[in-house]
Every structure is written in structure tokens, then in C-alpha cells.
Image (tube, rainbow, N blue to C red):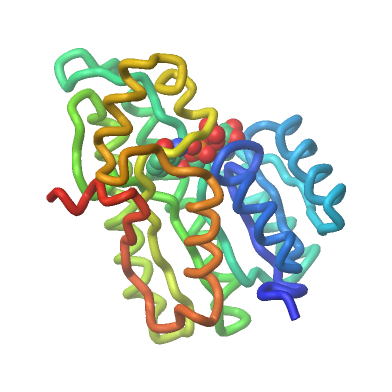
Length: 252
Ligand SMILES: NC(=O)c1ccc[n+]([C@@H]2O[C@H](COP(=O)([O-])OP(=O)(O)OC[C@H]3O[C@@H](n4cnc5c(N)ncnc54)[C@H](O)[C@@H]3O)[C@@H](O)[C@H]2O)c1
């Protein structure tokens, strides 16, 4: 028996990087995966990828920062499946690195809107479906920058610290309803979001040194942690923000 046989799992940001890797991993474990992303082409590609591996996927595009699009996503899930077992809120953007003094206002608003408000809008759709069935699991992809800081990451770090806070509040509001809500806090992972790091040897070496293990993380190392946090082996974990960061945040 596979771990998520016949469960309905939503992954946002599923067109690329950590979301795509996570969606593929859930599908391999028997889930029907709702792949959502702002990119229509991207989710069609992700769904085809899952189906080519013998898995089941439904594609539904949504910009997580737009309430009407998020609401339409949950209407579709409610009408098509009538339930939602696991939700992984992974959609996010890095934004342009800039100091507090040089940050651009529109860019600041966009990073907060996608990375923080998007998680709230998604949980607002996910929790009622889970309350209806009397159980469920939500994983929010925050970041090591939700626990610590680096210069020039103001909006991103603020959004990710916010995701950790939202996760704790949502977990407290649902803990007695058999709903578990946790955040995962990855270090720097080899995904398309970090192309600018991977393309710059000096910056890459600097980022590798940030992690005591001496390297960047791999997408499958995050997906594995997300699946573990979603399955019945972790039933006593809720309201946690778990670093998966090669030791970065252990430095304090
Ligand atoms: N890669 C890392 O080092 C790292 C580290 C910590 C946290 N994270 C977080 O993990 C998540 C996934 O990042 P990734 O590295 O896979 O990046 P990625 O760029 O490969 O994937 C992000 C996906 O989110 C989608 N997206 C962007 N804006 C959206 C919106 N408004 N609505 C819906 N979808 C949208 C993109 O189209 C893309 O498919 C993000 O929340 C990111 O902040 C990444």
C-alpha cells in the first residue's frame, strides 16, 4: 500500500522546483495531485509529467495573490473531489535582492502579496474543506529566511517570517479538529529560483559555505521532508517550523 493512495493532494507552485518535485513524489505514493501554479503552460507540463509516470493529476491555474483565483481553485477542488487531504502551499517568488534603503515599493508589495498573503488566501480555502472531513494536513513552504536573516532580503525574509507566524496561528486554530499545519524552512536549494546563484561561481561558493554541510540542498531532500510531515508518522507535529537547511540556522 502506498503512503497517499487515493488521497487528494494540492500543491501550489507545482510548475517548477520544489513544488514540481513534491507533486511528483506525492503522485508516486498514489495521490491524485491537484497541480496549481500561475503558469498554465507549467501546470499542463507538470500534469503530463505525472501522468507519464503512471500517476494522476488535475491541473488548475491560479495566482495565489488574487483572492478570486484562489477561491475558484477551491471551488473546483470542492466540486470535483469534495475533499482535500493534504495541501502544500509552495508558490513563491524570490524578488530582487535589495537593501532596506534601496528596495522598490512595488516589488516589496509583490513579494509580500505572493509569499505571505498567498499562503493566507490558500489556507482560507483549504481549512474549510478539511474541517468538513474532520482531518487534514497543510505544509507551508517558508524558508530558512523565515527563521534567520541575510542582508538584502528584506521583503522576502519579512514574508517568510510572516509565513511561520501564520502557520503557528492556523495550527492553534485547528489543532483540536485533527488538522495539522506546519512550515518547512529550506536552506538554499538547487531550483530555477536560484539560477542567479548557480550561474555565479563566487556567489555559489558563498551560498555553499552558508550551509555547514558545505553544499546547496536538492529538491528531493525537501520533498521527502514534506511527505514525511504529511503522513501518519508525524501525527504529533503541528505548529512547527522545521529547518531543512544543512545546518544553516543551527548557527543561530
Ligand atoms: N529554492 C530555494 O532555495 C528555496 C529556499 C527556501 C524556500 N523556498 C521557497 O520554496 C518555494 C518554491 O520555490 P522554488 O525554489 O521551487 O522556486 P521556483 O521558481 O522553481 O518555483 C516557484 C513556482 O511558484 C510559481 N509562482 C510564482 N508566483 C506565483 C503566484 N503568484 N501564484 C502561483 N504560483 C506562482 C512559479 O510560477 C513557479 O512555478 C517558494 O515559496 C520559495 O520561496 C525556496
